[in-house]
Each structure stands twice: as C-alpha cells, then as structure tokens.
Picture 1 (cartoon, rainbow, N blue to C red):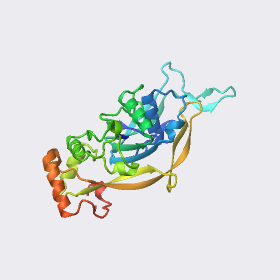
Picture 2 (cartoon, rainbow, N blue to C red):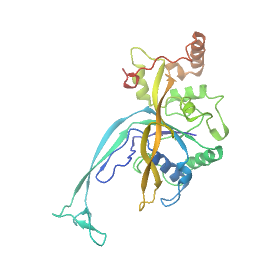
Picture 3 (cartoon, rainbow, N blue to C red):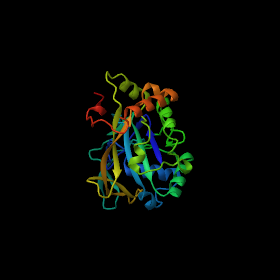
Picture 4 (tube, rainbow, N blue to C red):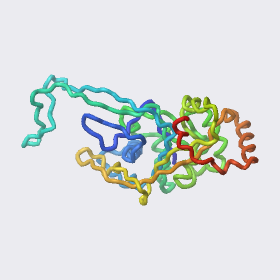
Length: 298
C-alpha cells in the first residue's frame, strides 16, 4: 500500500513538547500509525500493537521549507497561567510572579511531499486501504491542523499523482504492477522505486528550467530495518494521554533513482516513444553515478 502525504503544512513532532513544538524532516512512525488508527476509528486508549508491526518506508519527493508559527497562550478567565511546578496534591501551582501570557512556538513543513510504502499481509492492507478511503475520524499530517490533500492513497491502476505529468507517467508504467485491491507488489524499497515522482508542479518546473536536464533524480528513503544503523525514537507504546511513551526503532537510509518526467510525459504516446528510444540506447537500466547536488537543484 502506498500513501502520498502532501498538504499546505505538515508537522511531525517527534519528542518535542511544551512551549516549543518542532518538526522532523520526514514523517514519524508515531504519526503514520496515528493516521491509520484515526482512519479505522480507534480511540486513543485502544490497542495499537497490530499497527506497530507494519513495516514503513518513507521517500522524500519534495522536502519543503521550515515555517515558524508564533503563538501566545492565555486563560480566557483572566487568571494567572499554571507553572510547571506541582503541589503536594498533584495540582499545578500558579506562576509566581503571576504570568498571564505564555509565548509558544510551532514549527511546520510547508509544501512538502512524501511517499510512504506500507508492508503487511494483503488482508491487513486491504482493510487499511478501505479505512483510508472512508476514514472514521479526520486525517491529519502529524497535527490536527494539517489536513492532507488528495490523492492520499496511490494505486498502480491509476498512477495517482498530484500533477498531470506524474499521473501520465504512472499510467504508462503500471500495467504489470497492479495487485489485488490496488496493492503494489514487491519489497518496500522496490515499490518506492516504482511510484512516479510526486513533487508539485512548481518543483518540477524548477527542474525543467535547469540548463542541463538530468535523466534521473535521486530521492532519499528511510526504511524500517531491525538491523539498521540509525535509531528513531518515535515508536509509540500507546496513544493514551495518561500513559503515552515512546520506544526506539532501527532504520536504514537508502536512495532510489527515478527517471525525470520530461515534458513528453504529458503525451502518453510521446512518453512511450521516448522510453523505447532510451531502451534502444541501452541506458535505462544503468542510472548515472550519484550526484550529491541533485537534490539541491544545482
């Protein structure tokens, strides 16, 4: 199953809390599990152990930019705000001297696009996909103020995308990938290498304006891997606000090489002709050496 996570803003907070709520550069497993739990209608106190067994892979198609949102918080009753200190009775003490306004900060990713591949047995994925099509609770990209744009669920049959160019590319390359109920076939990394680039039109146009247009674009991928060298502290044990805690998971970093969707991709016939010409030249199966400046648009 493949998700496209895009919206005006999204925020994947990790372990940040209190007056400064930061965001990580990519979706957290806690946020992804929470999104699926909301789609299924699970309450915060419901068990989530089955969702924790899902294997995720996240591909960054458009990293977005960081947005800082300035907040002030006060009590509408005009009373002093509570402090972080707790009395012997377990209640928060008022601030001393009295403080009527707190300054808080919220950070968001704006104009970011991610592709998430989820691996599990087919019946589990079919159930989750149906829940995403008809969610029980509103879905959010990390925080409730961050609704996702459509399409959220990508299937090989329609090559769903946020742009016309990628949709054409997806339809042109999905004939032998369609599984039951719109599921993709292959490992998480293989699927992330099949899904067309989902960046927005402006991001694509910026690439098209480059003096030398690359044939491939390298996109970073983060995969669940019990043998991975990196650690993420974003695996929730429960969403119960009274007992919420996180444990660590191991991940590994990879790259996928995707063909750049040229202007010809708007015309499926021209796109297929270009693919045939590249196959004749014998260079489609051998991506060029990794270019560390590709993601910077240089």
